[in-house]
Image (cartoon, rainbow, N blue to C red; front, side):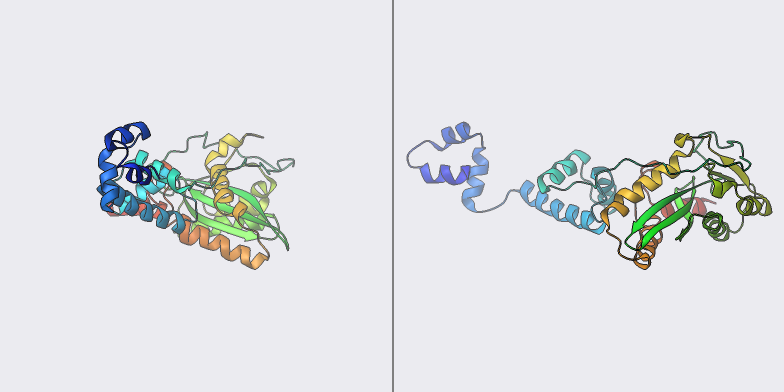
Amino acid sequence: MKYAFIKEQQFHFDVQLMCQVLGVSRSGYYTFCRGKRSHRQLANQTLDMQIKEIYSTHRGRYGTPRIHRELKAQGCLYGRHRIARRLSVLGLKAKPKKRFVITTDSRHNLPVMPNLLARDFTTSAMNKKWVGDITYIWTTEGWMYLATIIDLYSRAVIGWSLQETMTSELVCNALLMALWRRGFPNDVIVHSDRGSQYCSDAYQLLIKQHQLKCSMSRKGNCWDNAVAESFFHTLKTELIYATDYQTKGETKQNVFEYLEVYYNRKRRHSSIDYQTPYEFENQLREAA
């Protein structure tokens, strides 16, 4: 609009003076008159298209840091501040986070295991430390419950189970999937909260049979299992809160696609230098 006004008044007022008064560059005005876009404008147009493609592919889950790393992986070396500006211009934001609700029921008389993990979420190899937890998902057909097992080395979800009831079978199935996928390793620290499902005879028998080391958070202390809590926070922000589930079958398919197709293979994780969990694990395998 400013350039159009200057062009309209160029025979009445000095162009340089009008540019100064309106706060625009004279070179920009002459570029406008030639009907051509500047190199910067063309570059921004290309960048905007790339940003919108990544944003759409990840369904609005990516903000500046992950879009920056995705572009870098594609060989496009844009600065983070520039990407943040273009996101602002485009009016795009990553999905906002919501408060996570703790649902652990530790009011039981079952035996409780010691906290072997002790908030040390670091490990130098796969199958050394796993963490598990349970969350819930509402559908119009009723509640569903999701149990997961995460390997702390790569943050990959290696075991999960989605059922209509929150029983010991739910957590046992998630642990069995993790064991099967990882080739039934021994001496793994498997950490969880002290909910009745994890303290059950069935779950503790699995731990003993496969020579695992059971670890449990202190009562009412969610920080003792922060990685598992954080994962469910991400799951709910990026998937659950954005979806109005009509059927339990739809929910199962949606959760499967998120965990197996998206989270482990495509989503870049900040704790592993913005690589995907499977990329991070493959680096270890290739180095061995």
